[in-house]
Image (tube, rainbow, N blue to C red; front, side):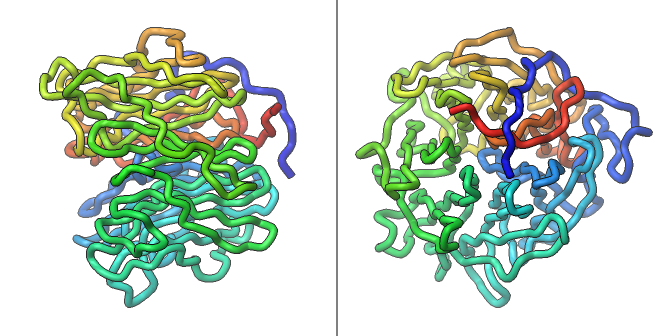
Length: 431
């Protein structure tokens, strides 16, 4: 059962560093961060996409991380790695069945001792990507039956990816799925769309898709659940970050169409596909996203915040003059949920070839500190992909995992831990 605990203390500066002797099977990486999944000669090892919930906790408070491994061209595998000591040491535990894409997300359920694992893949013999969701028994270490196919792919233009997953207080999972160019219409209303699939624990039946985007195209969304409300942020068109909320009990959206977050950007500025959303203990929503334009000096990271029921306000987090625009896969900036109304921004900069990992704390959308260095690396691309802990039900010192691109890929997947001692545990929000 979920139990009430006191909120954690305010976030302290710094990150946990330790000598190699403190780490068991996976030693400390070259940049001093605990290693979740070491680089393997001849194989690509990475985290899942930055806008996906790739970190979760089980009923016993053990941490799990979803890792992508590419053993040969065209064949990806998803693996679950587990930490029994709050993120200090990790070990590979199980392979996700039938997954052969890099899209995936996980969520825990403290009442049932399982992980919900949603991913893009297919049953043996399938040629095209489908959206699927499986259940893993964390106590017995076994998968419970075959994964459920949420949406079946049928051709090159009709395929599906999983971008995020969240679990409601009662254990009901919600999965965010995206389409390719020509999905089945109906149930989809357009191509390049984003939709929600829900499963009530009362009957175990999946429902959906509930298409999130009202405009013609959408990409790379992420979601959070606050009580009965599902919050979703996503990109629409070519220069807008949008938001929409969905009532689980009513099975309907609470806004007629897309609520545009970045509509006040200067002409010519573009947002990237990726963004990062968290919802604080009091219903405040915060979104972090990269912004760029035709002039290099326009590159920056922006943050938008709206208190419950209030309008959105936007400000700059950090300048990044060499940040590219639009369709590029920016995955180097995420939000971690802090105590109360705090949001922790973790990011690197294209201008520095993603060699430095920064942190900045915001409260109700206002900066509480200048940017601070968390970790550095000599390798370009070391912090090009960051996946944050965003589950509002989990208290932990594990902020995120980072994975490199380019030369930085040889570092493997590493854990970013807040300082101090904090046991991973579940808690119930006050509202």
